[in-house]
Amino acid sequence: MTRTDKTNPLARRLAARKNQKGYSIIELSIALAIVSIILVTALTGVQRILRSNKVNEDLKGLNLAASKIGVMLSNVQSTNGITQANLVALRVFEDFRVNTATNTVTNAFGGNITVAPNTNALGTVPAEGGLIIYSSAIPPEACSDYISGLAPISSHISASSATSSTLDGSALTNIVKTNLAPITISGLATACTAAAGDTITVAALVTK
Image (cartoon, rainbow, N blue to C red):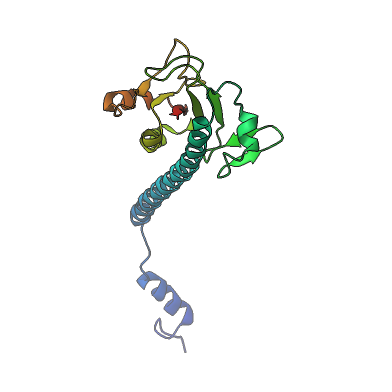
């Protein structure tokens, strides 16, 4: 007796496979595209949060350093002779990563924080009347927040995507704040513009 299609195990398996419905290539492509968009959006949000946290971390440390520098300046007649090594030894940068062997101070973005007296007059600030804090390797996306956070503690601020920004000498670059005046939006936009892959160096003058 020959088995019918209904009772043949092989026939049943073949029939079951025919009835199974899988995903088409188009459906899978759409699903992958949606997942990719979700992942990119989430990654962008995480990067923004991490960048904001780094800015806040630096500003906290710089505000503390500026406070200590201000107290120090109120007790001396001139900034002449104040060095990075002295400031490191006095624990001015205790909220940053500090290499005491090389007197190197590293900010949250991996750049260097260096301090030097202003050897030239800046507006109403006489020569050696304050200390310029330089912070390098700031991403252009964080530049505006970084400068805005430094504004309350600085009389002058500049920023540049060049090797180093300067607030000293005759070749001043991208001044965004001067003589305690408010930050200019046009100056901020110019100072925080950088070519692809470049970072910003921010310089802030702290006075007595």
